[in-house]
Image 1 (cartoon, rainbow, N blue to C red):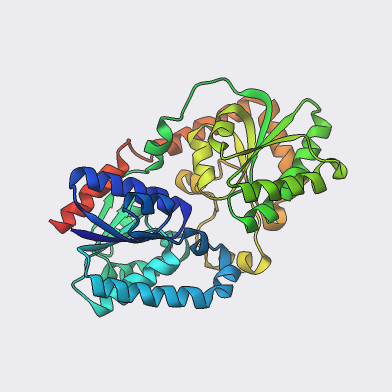
Image 2: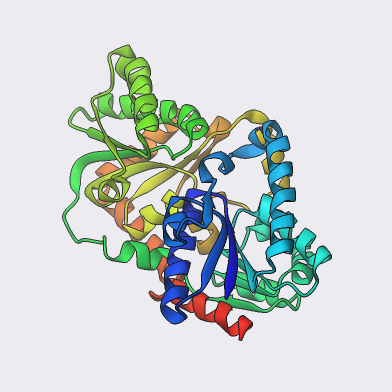
Amino acid sequence: MKLYFVAGEASGDSRGAELIQSLSAKQPGIEFLGLGGRQMRALSREQIEDWCERAAVLGFIDVIKNYGYFRDRLNSTIEKVIQLKPDAVVLIDYPGFNLRLAKAVRARNPAQRIIYYISPQVWAWNRGRIPKMARDLDLMICIFPFEKPLYEQSGLKTEFVGHPMVDSLGAKRTNAPRDPDLVTLLPGSRKREVKKIFPVMVQAAGLILKKRPGTRFAAAAASPKMAALMQEILTEQGNGGNGLPCELSLRNAHELMQGASAGMVASGTATLEASFFRLPYVLIYKAAWLTFFVGRRLVRVKWLGIVNILAGREIVREFLQEDAKPEAIAGEVLSLLDEPAARQRLQAATEEVIAQLGQPGASDRAAEAILGVLR
């Protein structure tokens, strides 16, 4: 059996690696091919190409700048799938590329089985796309419960398997006491995110320190490059140019989520992880004005954070674009630090959201769903 995977970001690489392990355990001898990241490449005996660093662009402007590269990669991937005739193409998130790939492959080879894992958030920006996806896909595997009925209405076979985060983070969860004076700053993993968001976090931290002198700060960087960039920002913008007293560490975001009493978190996967670890936090998002302008006119949901979308209300305060002002952010974080009732309300609300994500075993259930289609 041959399966052709396509993932384009670090999170997709992690989910793909988990899925490969589950598939291999259930049916040894599967050959894994395609595009992914470092983890997927290692598990595929290096038959999956690691392209995530180049593929993981953010926002409308980056896509335009790299249009030629993605056009060529899309065309070459289409030809590869047609040539290899895998038992199934397994697409993991990454909708800008993967939905185009699914449509083109279906047109060239209507018999090719195409499976999507980690539903693209078309329910947020274009629900009219769902009937078209139903024509191009054989199976949609969802990780949020509300997605299943949306896809099934179009006739697309859909399985809700639960969120893989429950497995990947469950073993890391502890009941260690939180530091009452520690605030964590988590500005994201991409350079453009860090450059836009981390300065605002640092400025807000400086205001918190003035009103609450005993407060300490800790930030997590996703890579050595991001650590160097964050250190530059700390030196330039923190505490009037003298540097904010902030411990900067590498790849320990999950420990900080469990040790701090409050946090500032960039919109993205980290917000769901922070809720899983019961961190009281605020959500911050800033982007290039054109990216935000276009995105705001496409998005059809009231909130940006998936936690708020799942809750159906704003339980985590969102500070977006021009509203991401240091003064407002600092005020909300101070409330979380100094008001036990505010922390407890937020933690209780986020626990209700996390309970919607299902039981452990998401990748095993996803693997069984894929093998079921192939059988």
